[in-house]
Length: 166
Image (tube, rainbow, N blue to C red; front, side, top):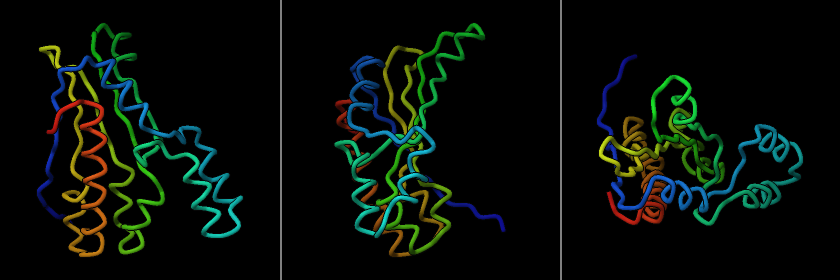
């Protein structure tokens, strides 16, 4: 099967420096970047309530946590290109379950990918594809309703980090 659909891409163009946007963004996130954390917490959980409490301990103020950070600028400098760019995979299993329980195909697009970079003109930008638009191809009302809530959380985080709407 091959499918086509429209994705809404958001970019927040900030007057803040790249470093300030990165710092503000990362300050709002918890972290589960150690790949052993989630499996360990799943194995240790004795109930749904216990699992939820264990996961909430890793949430940042935004309700999100970092699963992965890629500092593309660091490796690009090794090939002779000066660039400031970091990509992130962020999410929260408790948010993901509000969608995945209705359609496992949601797993293709959660956790979310975000990139913060400095443009050629020196602007710091934070970019992401709107989760509800990524989920739209599933044509599932329950998934769409949950994804719209996720959109709002992601936009709020982006405005907090960049100081501007998209």
